[in-house]
Image (tube, rainbow, N blue to C red; front, side, top):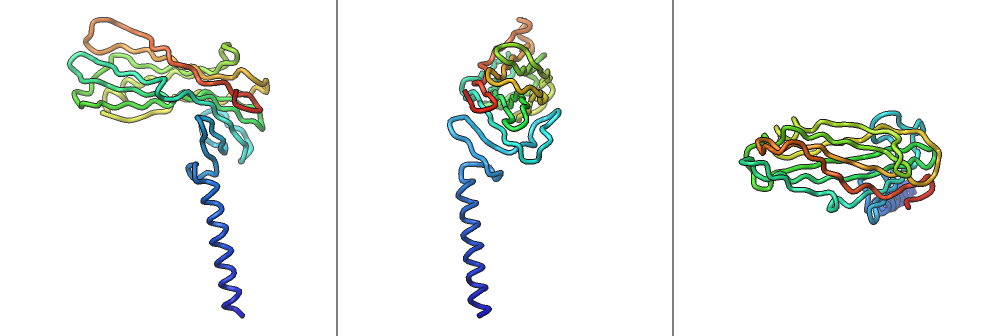
Length: 200
């Protein structure tokens, strides 16, 4: 009798684990997933004032990384490829929004590390192109002293229950080392829009 009950319990446990694994097959272990650049996941990520609920649902709209990729050619330093994932996040339960920017870089052909005299990421949360909040992050030391790597340049959470029109925009100020041309601005493609109900 005990053996039959134990066997049944093991079978039920295996079935439950299988269902969890199936539900998270396209995610990263948190029960969420991504389809066509749109992600639904649990809160807790990001800086600043986060939503207070432990399981608040977030919806994210991102621009494809291929739209925000650039190769820099500092004189005598070797090429530096930079890729930026620009996203906007909406907490559909509590009315919080956040602009996200994940910056990655590497040197395809190696070479000396000191590539930039300036490399500052400006991340902005906007609603219908009106500034809501933002963050400036100096990545020059990180890129100059690491052959490859990545950093988050997320702005803080902003509370606003207004629906529709929320986007993330990013610009990068840079100055290549030893090129004698001074400062330039790279205007990246902004994220798609997100509202409190859905991604637009």
